[in-house]
Image (spheres, one colour):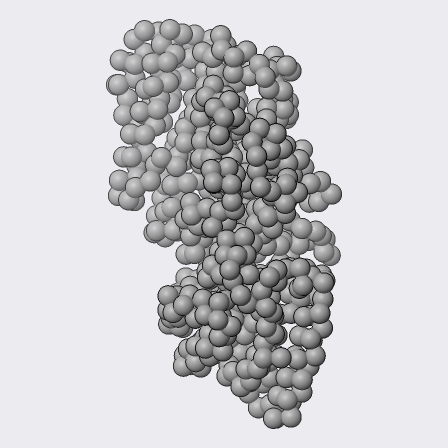
Length: 579
């Protein structure tokens, strides 16, 4: 690739390096003025890996008093460079990223204080020409984060200087406590004399004088609710339509990015083709009920992941899902169920996997002890990017699975729930081997027999697997765990799907030979043979219609389509037939 072509800034959060080292940057600087004019104390939540940290790094450089001589060099080619605000390069910028504070509970306060003091020492050194040459030495007299922050604020105030405080991933280590420990220990750091609450109290105390602006961001509003009595000054603009497009990429921005590289190098796919490949996996996020008519948002991290790999070798990545984002999604698993029962939150996930959506009011904030309540759990799934706003129904937002990247994670969650609540363990290696034979040899029956035999052998799972919807979800969850097919449930399209269409991943595996339409029918345990036969006939009729449809002929590609009927009687698979 020509050296003049801009590089893809995948995983990068250093804004100045992106600009100076010739990386491609999607210009988000027009939002600076909007934030500045909206609130002095700005609170904003978005899912992980959506570009929050890069935005904050850009914001910090824009307002940093020490960067004013480099303003034209850094921002000259961007929107804000041509439309600067009166406050540019006006503040001492203190930026803390609490994702760096990850340790055991016993060491958490110590690590928190050590991290904050390290960052604030660097801040003092960078600003010693303004705060006084002895500022770093004086700082060493203080030990805790709140003491050091108080000292710096007082020093700035004495010099009539103003500060801009940026808190990135403010909820990170507190959420980790919820994952690894319990509500009581979490309560200890965010309430009463808890060190985190004490730190934010200092922020609040100086917000009337020296801390003129704050930008606070994270993944969820859980901690904020718990800290309200100690820090109740930040306005939450996460669901405001004006800022729907501030983090992430819209389709225009993705197209512009692709067009840039197509104009400078030979690519085997058109822009429309690449959009068509990325869109089902990374798009369809909406963060405001007032933005439903606007272009939906792509996960920017996933777009850059894709383009980084695509530009390297000019073909579609073997894995459409970034492994880093899997790790982030895993942090939700502990909240789905809390013991050896199929809890309400597991039922919420099952409903979402079955239908592709649910309804519920999105909570602006909620305390940690209420996080397991289903109404808040839906909100948490939304904040983590597992659900997005897709419409309104009877006065409530419709919360839908945004894309295939998320749906694959939900399949994994359901498989984990089955394993943990009913000791139902299916060997993934065996499933992969059986599906490989489905894909290349057309030997499909052994796969379904294996799943059904394991289901039939676990009596305790029957309490929540009995019923048509549950059986379909069970089958779908395991079909979605291997890399040969995209397991597409009927709700993905309004064109008339079978219960499950296994779309071959021909972009990655062009030599696959078979694709599958699967119709799942269910009868109660006492159903007569005549009912089973009628269900089988109905399923075959439906499958013949699906197999002749235009979308099947297109999406099956070069593969031979097989249509399979699965009929369950209770939790037993009693009919397995090919049409």
